[in-house]
Length: 429
Ligand code: ACO
Image (tube, rainbow, N blue to C red; front, side, top):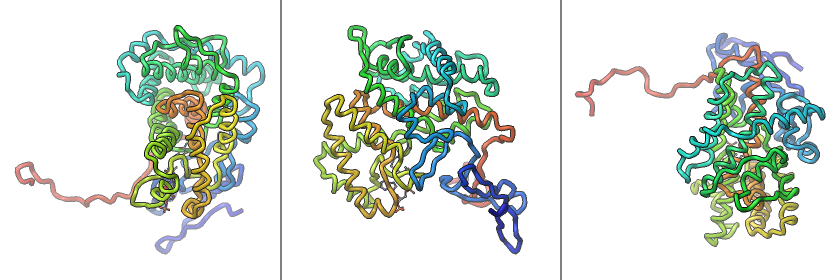
């Protein structure tokens, strides 16, 4: 394989080093291009820009492959727990039995939030968006950890990671109980990660909640499937903020905000809203799809399409069969699930979706499962954030440990007015 690519511009040739990853992904290193030629590269939306090298997650979008630290997502979803996956993402290997016990102990140790943080909660109105509460509370939690996370010291980093991974579920559940006018439910030391979250969501002072093991497993799988996804919008945001040497909490809080948008993590909620809208309006699925295909309508089929996957999103495949199991176990018949299955069938046969390689993504089925579990749509993206936490933290650490890391600072092609005269106030208008 060639070691360099050659670019010819304005009568001169420039040799550009070619970088090859462990799975033979090949990129042209243009970092010296501007210094040598005056040219920058332009790639609106970063669709073809590698912003970093990374050892954490591998995606082959053409073939629907997703691996964390080399291990296929299907195997992790079937055999591992979310806590093991969190360790894998952050330390590169699945934990030994002792390492797993240590991580679980730290998660338990950090599961409560400082009592003073309850006052911060009280300041939010009951209808505050849970993603706003989550990002604000993550920064607030950071105020209670005066020591700066040392990414290079395993022990110290593990403790900080466990603190965030653990507390995020307490904060998430508390934002939900607040929104329904119920008191915050304290975590239990005897429950594992995901069961504990469900307990904090659904136990009430007068009514304990006993999580069904199959429901716990389905939610644990959802967390595993969301745990990392290389350089997506929120992860790239975390890395962008981390590159300025911002602390762990500030960087992760920014990731939460990026995830919030309906084109990213907010799509799981948007899928349910779309299905409910179709059901309530009495519109047929066929006419909705026709509207989606009419570019003037501005309507998109939520839960469909992906920047990287041009084949089935492997996470959607796993969730489709998980949804089936959960519905059978809970004995639920949800018309929205039937609609989703039919919508998928219609879209996958339609030329518009086929030629654009638009397949269901992770959000298409995750919301339907969460809804069956009893989680309200406003909380879906918050649950995505709980799942993504280990990945964000691992990516934050990778930036901090990279000896060659520089602040992320893209360039632009300026298209505004050229230099012009200043007009004083009395001469304007
Ligand atoms: N419905 C209808 N048309 C679509 C959809 C969709 N969901 N997604 C893409 N298209 C069309 C575009 O209009 C475009 O058509 P054109 O070539 O005729 O102009 C073509 O497919 C390519 O789409 P882009 O917008 O260029 O794709 P991009 O990579 O920029 O966007 C995205 C990816 C944001 C995920 C997009 O597919 C989308 O909006 N999907 C719906 C929202 C969603 O489900 N987001 C969750 C993504 S997964 C995640 O973040 C966890």
